[in-house]
Image (cartoon, rainbow, N blue to C red):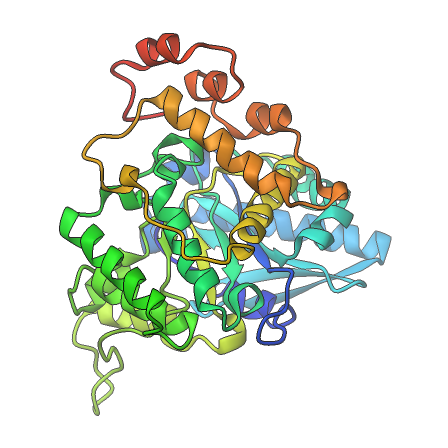
Length: 404
């Protein structure tokens, strides 16, 4: 979500960590649910609406319903806790160790869960009934209009010590100029496309990736730290720059080392509010809890959406993992103008098809189903599914290219 990165990943990642490179990768979905009362309160109460009365009431109703179900079914338990901000949470834990949390974020009730694709394949029905259906039963809904669909990728379980893999993943994100400009999301306030980096920062990223190709970085974290400091933070050294860096389509703040000391002084005082927030949110992330956040991911409306998105994200990671040479940055990344919506939709389809090509048979992605379920209705979906010619689609998008 936009305002904060909740501490939920501390509990969900603790069971998902593995060896230096323990494939398959862990994928942490932030599922969000809201209603008109929660949204109206978003700026009218404590902490930007996170602690607004309607949010708390909705979270408590969600948690109470889970407690009632757990008592009747006995295949899972619900415990109450608090996050690092002091907000009450409900943690559902199943006999097979699958779990999720019910907590708060700006104008939503947020349900984070960390899992792997094989686990999600087994639990689609559970996720639908115990998360999405419960949310509906207490007056909440998942919606594309409000809320976010960010996904945390476990840094250790995914990349381990493989610098080439991480370097190519960064290049793949940069080359996918469609990802945060309508294909998966279009929210400049919450998931800015890397294509919108200043030209000099694009040049800096190219230089850093070239340094990686020459062996300049011993670990993926070393590379992430360089990209964060000199590209996503733009060379600025402040807590404010750290917090601003989280709003690009990829957020490295829970993985990289910061280029400045954000700890309090000897008297326990912070220089600025942003330094305090950066330290409180990201300052003490243990190795097993480090993640890379992919922010340009559309909101999940059903458990089927979760599974489809998990398949594509897992497949894309595996596709990039199999590369044996550095992936060049595309001329599209450096271009002054984006391709048309129709062209981007076609490129995105190819990107999804490549991801699907390396998935096991039990995780097959039906391209038609993916397009229908995961793309906004309208020209993006029509072009992705080949139901409109590029020229016709481009004409229909004239004047609308800024939004999907």
